Image 1 (cartoon, rainbow, N blue to C red):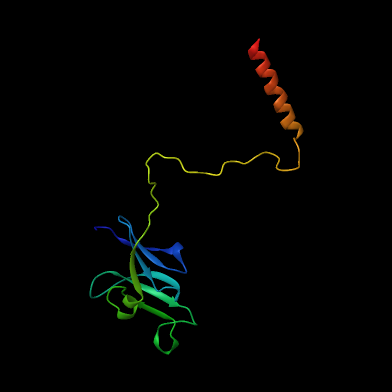
Image 2: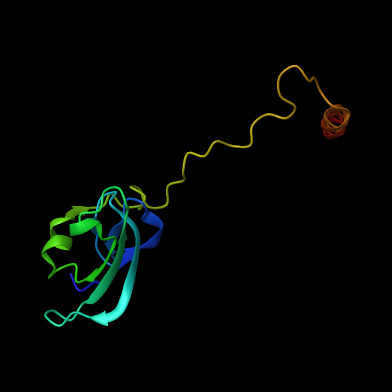
Length: 135
């Protein structure tokens, strides 16, 4: 795929990286990462952007309880071991041009409230209009 992998910033705390063309998706760091930023620096080995990851204090995978690390997702062994590749379900409609199911607006008034003065006036107006059409 000629697409670009993009960090989905709204996917926290279960971080993921999505392809902007196909349905490929990378699930990264599980629930271990607290914050992820894309660094402006490039990897020396493969040329991709580096990720700056701040891990949770309680379940950090880094040695000696460190919390932050900047590395390449593809080249770094630790980052790569915490990555899983999946295919997303997508957001496309199954039948092009088909409408969604929607819940509608509901009923006016609700249970036990009875008809309001506006509802009764509307009903009288409709009855008069229907009677005028019959003549």
